[in-house]
Length: 152
Image (cartoon, rainbow, N blue to C red):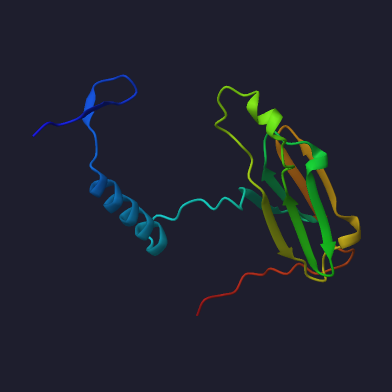
């Protein structure tokens, strides 16, 4: 029986997979991703966010390089802060000018419930060096929501 050889990136050789092997791999990979194997893939609809508390506010940092400040939608609806990005659909002519295109920024959305101790009217956002910074100040005289609970 002849074995077909396929070059891998021009370095060395490996046998080409059979069709049944590809089908088995497809279903195994799909089931593994669906059922989980202990490793959770990164969601495409999330971007990393750091949240820290200071004495006077909550500070958030969203990692989103390559965007413009106009690309973000930051809004408060009742007691929920929504932060999102929805990319514009590019025309076919622009996509054809690329010889190779490997990176893209996926849409994302984060929502955070705000307690009554935060001043939603005073929220500030700025975009610097690929990081969206959001500051949520506390209301004047509001008590902090956290406390140390003694374990008995």
